[in-house]
Length: 74
Picture 1 (spheres, rainbow, N blue to C red):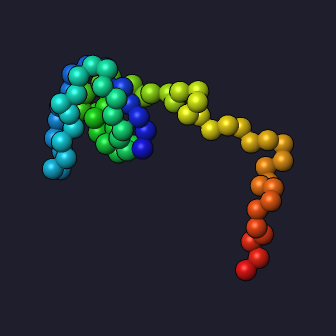
Picture 2: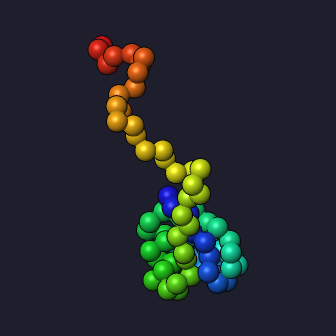
């Protein structure tokens, strides 16, 4: 699921699901299918939120193998 910022007031219902009421600046989490439907219903209402720098995954080091972990032998 991705996080989106609402760009203008919006409310809708589809297949028993209710979206909103949302106002400008609200942040919502939606799966890709719901976000695509909302964008078809009202183009430009959603803007994707980029994760804050602290929320981003740290890049893997040169040696990506976990040190000290158990082997996968089973």
